[in-house]
Image 1 (cartoon, rainbow, N blue to C red):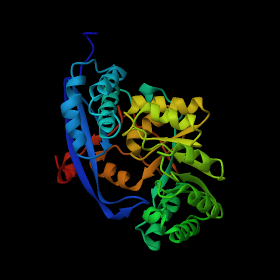
Image 2: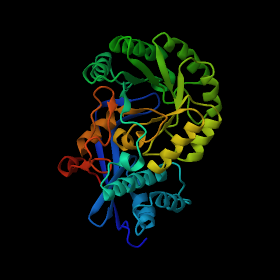
Image 3: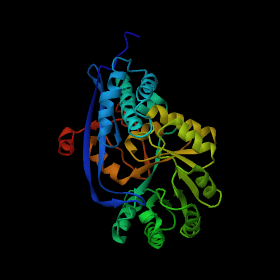
Image 4: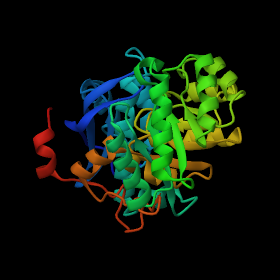
Length: 369
């Protein structure tokens, strides 16, 4: 309707933040992380969204998406999402295009909630007050002392009762060290905290089953991407042969991807990343798909982009309190949430939208575009 506020501008910014130590998982190493920020405007009101992706993502926003959503009614976010998906048809939706759409979609939901003066969780409608989190890091580059400090900080200082470390070092070629690190992690957190592992697709199928037998001895209850999530039949086979939950889905960029994963019976809990899968609009649909299959959903990384939407679904298991992204979100934004006790409470302070505000003076040294 003509009397409703319209999107009148879309801006981007790119920030690259070095890690606080060298980091690696089973299949990749890195020493910096890039956040692509999108700001959408409707008159004097703005909304922000972001994704962790290459700087090229910002170019996609500017060249393919900004003109698509400018002029649309700011309240009609699903309409904008559909138009963006159509706009990238020839560029290819999976990958950076989906991440670009995600950043704009999150910004549009933030804008709508701010226009209405509501925390986003109130706009979406809450299914729960508190959102459980798990501490996530434990990189394969960590020595014993650093891993222990991180784990103890989560479990003892912050009271987070579930934690995850990376395994599958060097494409699964350091299996003995993987198992030693898991045993040390169990010693560090004690018997009561939950222990998760993530192989990032580093193992072969048979190797993953063999490793799972040893992980059981340490009470591991979550085995994330034991093999590549591209291999759904193998994931489903492993799921049927190991006692802990098998999980995957962080590389889902489209709704059909999640549908195929669920139809294959590949996971016990579906992971979805709001900054990759097309934003809040598509994340809600992925959660509904999981719910229809009797499964929980877990939010992958970017905890402050997930918190409000996670509180809006009944089948949420938890969010990933990922070390890198927590550092960056605390650095760039005011309004970040507190995980003490193992939960977040989005919207509790009444701040509209996601409740985040970019702090220019802190962010400026890291801006690269």
